Length: 112
Image 1 (cartoon, rainbow, N blue to C red):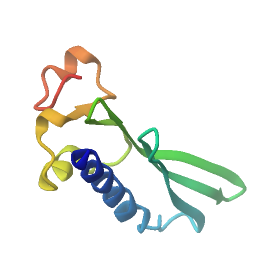
Image 2 (image 1 turned 90 degrees about the horizontal axis):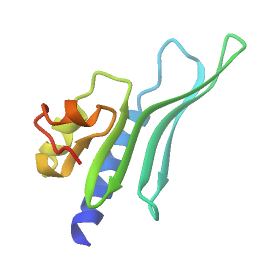
Image 3 (image 1 turned 30 degrees about the horizontal axis):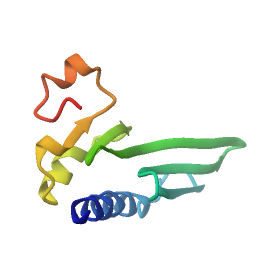
């Protein structure tokens, strides 16, 4: 259980770090950390209005499944797997979920 508590804290730390960055070109847009700690779903969402257009975009999406961190979405250049490793998460507990399973086998991370 201690492992899961640490993984949740790691994910929230990354999300909160990126939530602090305000997009310079989007004035009425905010970033929200969405955390379902009971079911282990975590997202960073950009939301608001820009020039009369509604913006709602999921920047990051993490899940914890079978005691592994699944990176389900990353719309940035951030190396989330490397960030997690620097926080002490082993590669064997990180899954790049947005890659097909056969491509995951070619990564340095877990397949599932």
